[in-house]
Length: 115
Length: 112
Image (cartoon, rainbow over all chains, first blue to last red; front, top):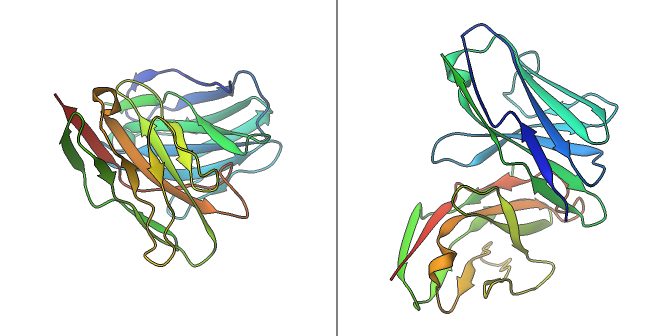
């Protein structure tokens, strides 16, 4: 079945640096991927919708210059957290849309810690 | 704006007891409702969606448009049901492959 991977699973970085997180659909093509952020013991908050070959659509309140999304191929979307600060520390989860099944499949998440 | 409310953060039941996880929604369009489950140390996965009208792992959920609810039920809880459950909403025209709004989740703990 449809599998989505994320890399890295865990990353620790210094404040002011940039971090890139990859989301891959392993056995299907995904024209649409989604990026979520999950705070401890809280819900998943949609950050943006990533569309292959076009600009991402960001949710209200999400800084597009801070959270750069690139969806350069049908199996890969990347989220870059630029100039990371401690408040960006969170669990970032991606999902990919499998069109035939009309379903989103989720990655395992990436734990970002900014020191 | 669309909103999904799960009033219970934690629900603890004994094995064999009935389970009901509550979910209410607010949406001006035509909603499609989902339940997702996240077992310990695993990724989020779809449990069921209202349009399929399936029973998965003994769980069922009926969309009640009058009460704007989509409660998840199971007549007899099993230990392996312990997990985090999220209710989610999408627009029925765009379906499950598109933008989802999640509730805050309910942690179900099934005790022996």
